Length: 215
Image 1 (cartoon, rainbow, N blue to C red):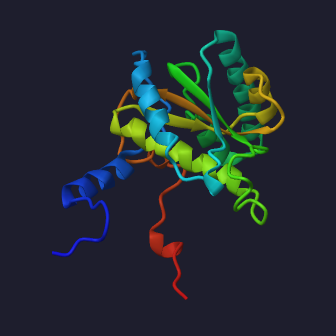
Image 2: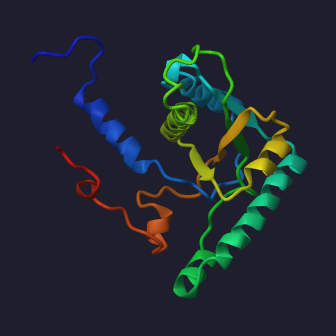
Image 3: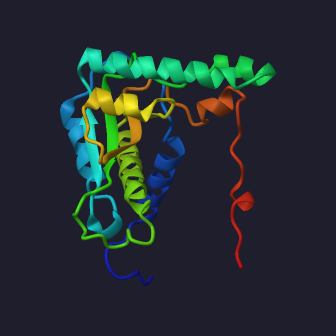
């Protein structure tokens, strides 16, 4: 059987990779067990190998361990979540109120991920016409980190119900850093193949056929 040029992966690897994608969940329920710093660094090293526009590597990871800084994140979540709840009505309001949308009080590791919007690395290649590629590059690093964590049994939750300015203040970042994600990382209380929002009846996954068109 002919193989493509370069590195190839066997059927077992591809099956395991498919399982990794399927079992990657947005985790919000963590145990109290600590996470070895070595594991976090392994995941970050893999994230640092992600593709980026112009090889600019615009991702900036800040780990928040200080309780005061973490409480500032909890405060902005509670404020934003209350505002979001007020926008819903009827059954949606009731359902939203019952959703667990973060693990800010439980997750042993928490990372704020920023994009450096003024980095000179990469010399601007690919950003003149689409400057948003800087942020998109950071998203690829986040997804790589997420898969690397899942492969090691760790869970990751992406919290977006936050005020970016409040997170930036807690992290003491300069204005050129744009918040992309706030990640909660730890050992999940349970393994779930089905997204928690689907289990809770909030939304269901739609088949690819609804999103794909060939012209």
